[in-house]
Structures are given as structure tokens and as C-alpha cells.
Image (cartoon, rainbow, N blue to C red; front, side, top):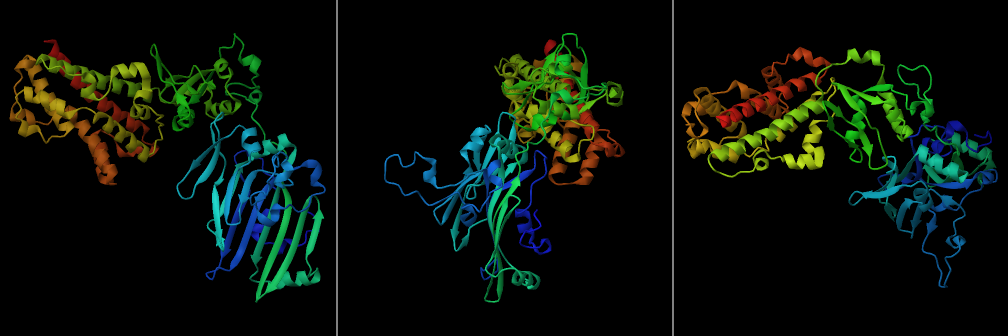
Length: 583
């Protein structure tokens, strides 16, 4: 800043120092304030600090002769409705009275304020607006082409009656703001008014008396500042009007796909080289790179079984996809380099690059079943259970539908894929080895809820066919009902009895079945999580054979154990019922 700036640096209030500072950071995601309106008051409603600011877009060739803008007095682009009664009065932009273009279009009629991103800004950058909130609504702008949320955001409105109803702050991402200014060939200029009651005014007043009691104005180095100090009723108020170019038309660094040096490579990989028909190189990445795409609904992560290999490729609408992503280990995927350079945006390639590992490190990662395969096995057993129970009903000439029994439809899954059942999709989300306890317990809760879709009433109907008194089973929960079913069917299989000849007895009802113990422990985990019962969680995990000492590295392997045990329960149920049906 110019050494002639009217107030010594050591006397500047913090907010004023920010108003007259440059935004030098080129960090793309940094939020830059482009409009604000705030005020602090004493209990007697006297203002102790106040500021309004709005950022103007000023062409570079005007910066050298910059003067105070009209908006520095009002904090808005337009005050009041235009007075015009003639046809065509609005055909000239000059009729709107604004001497500059602004990032935020702010309007007031004196009591009500309205805000929105200027049309040229959000349309020029291809943004999409959305409004959230109830009484205090926020307007947000997203770039749906790149799936960037909250490019710009701020309050929709404000009301003023003696004092402002709320503070207003509009921000915009650094990379988008700078790109817009670069395209306009303009600086982002803060046009502002600032007022503050000085609690210890001695040094400021000494400087003031040495300067000019009529006010200090200065225009230098491309900024314009006007300062006035008001001494009134034992209060010293600092008043500053200004126009300060804070954001230069310099773009943030953009990602260039030609600059990536992949693991196992020593030189940059050029697009022409990567897309060559003779390029059979692969890139190995940890499946953490999928978390971004799983958490954002706008993306899609395919789960397709090709032979015995799972393809898990992320995509965004019809814009782009990263094809050929194959799961090769529990937490590793393999991506053909040639596919990665086929139309994938540079930002997404940067994301992949962050999770890439050298091929020589593959042995450091577990070579066990991955979460997608495990979830698929679990779901297939659930569908088979529905089919088997339907078969039991058929033995008694009772027509039933398998999808109504187990809660899931094989046809829907074949037609709509994993998207047919959101809970199934969540179960297949990335399960890192270092999974946290809350994530683990939530996944266990999802498994429990998925199984609970089985229609317990249908199972009880089968037990009734076996001779179970309705009053003895009507209050039983699902897991207890399944235990009785497994006891009855397994006993009949041992004795070689046909399904129609299965008889129910009290011993069958009361006998615990070790095979189904995993389901009861799963329920214990759910209850312990809901009641934050540490001891119960440890006891439940011990029931799964998990050593608590192994949990320090995370709960990922523990989830594998729990999931496998639950699948084993379903496998046993299906095996026993199908064996009974084959007789």
C-alpha cells in the first residue's frame, strides 16, 4: 500500500485493515467476500462498528484514475425504483444509474434489501442458482458441469428499521471470481463505507489534528480513500469511504493433464502417448478415491460383475466417466491409463493421481474380498432366502411371492441394478481398513436394517404350518423366529422327514442355535451404539471372535468378520431349507 495512506498502519482497526488489503492468494477454493453488511451495537443500540461493502468490476485501464463509487455511500447497486414514465426508458443501461458493474446485484428501497449474483457473473460462468433455508434464506450458485457446490452464496434479503435485521455476507470461490475478472479484463474493487467508535482515541486524535480536521482524501496507487473523524457527545467515530482494488484479474493455476507424473513413471505422460493403442500400462489406486463419488449424489459409481471381476467406475451424467476401474484387492483398483485419458476432466485426473500408488506396493495391501463382492454375496443370499421360503409355502399349496417375503426383488435388481435399493448401495461403500468406530457401527446398523426387511409374519405362518401355537410365537421378533425355523428344518433334515411332516415342539422353540448367534450379536451392536454402551460393544465383538487389541488399526477388518458371519447365517438357512425342499 502507498506510504501516503491517510491512517498509520498501527492505528487501523482489524476490519478496516482487511477492507484495504489485497487478496493475493491463488488458492482455488478460498472464499472471497464480494459483498457484506454488518454492524455491532451497544445495549443502548448505539453503533460501535459498522460496514457495508460491495465489489465492483472495474476495467484495468480505469484503475489508475479510480475515484469513490456511488455504492460506497449506500452499499448497494441501485437505490429505489427508477422513476420513468416513458416507453423505452430502460433501453439504455445508463438509465439504471450505476457507473460500474458489480459482482453482486444489491438493491434497496430504503428498508428492504435484496441480493443476488449479477446475471453476467452467474450466466457467464455457467452457474445454477438454488435457494435454501426458511425465514433466513440463502442463495447458492453451483457449477453442475464440474459438480462444484457453493461457488457463490449469500443472504437473499435483509430488513432495516433503525438497525439491520441481520448481517449479510456474500462470498465467491477464488478461482471462479478470478476467472470472471480475467475474462472481463477487470479488477475486483471493494467499494465500502466503514465506521467505528474508537475506545482509545488519543493516538488517532493526535494524528488527526496534525492532518486536517476537514477530512483527508487521497488517491494513489490505484485506490481512493476518504477519512473523517467525528467527535460528538464524548464519542470519537472514525468514518472511512473507499474504493480499493483487492482482486487482480489473474487466474488461479489450472490443472493440466499433461503435467502428471504417475507412480512407476519418471517423466510426464502426454495425452498422445497415453491414448496410444499400444499403451497397456495400468494405474493402481486405493479405493479411497471412490469416496468422493459415493458421497455426492450427482455422481454415480457403477458396480458391474464382468466374469469374476468387479468394475467400479465413477461417472457424472453424460459428461464423463472413468471406465475400466477394476477391483483387484480389498482396497485397490486398477485403471487402464488409456481409459483415464479418454475425456476425463483434468480435475478428476488430479483426484485419481492423489490416490495412485506404485505397483510394487500392492503386496502391502490386503488381498482379501472387497466390500462390493461381500455385499453382493449377502444380497444374493437374501434373495435366495425369499425363494426358499416361497418354496416352503408351495409345499403347503399356499401361493406366496419371494420378493414380499425377503423384502427385495430379483427382477428389480436385474432391471435397475444397485440403485434399486439405496441401503444396499450404502453397504457397498468403501470400507477402509482404518474405518472409524462410528462408521463401523453405522454399517452394522445398515446390515441389521437390511435383514429386518424379511417379513416376520410370513415366517410365523410357516411355523404355524409346522404346528406352532400362534400364542407362543406371535410376540417373537425376527431373529428369534428365524432361530425356531432353522431348528425345526435342521431337525427334520437329520431325521429325513418331509417338510409336510415337520412337527413343532417346545424344545425346538427354546433351543438356542449357535449358527444364529451372529444375528443376535449384530442386534447387540445396534442397541449398544444407540445407548453408547461401551461394555456391550466389546462383549458383542467378542461374540464375533474379535480381539479388542486388533481394533487400534481401525474397524475395517472387524466389519469383514461381522459381514462374513452374517452371510454364513443366511447360507446355513438357505442350505437347510433347500435341502428340505429337495426331499
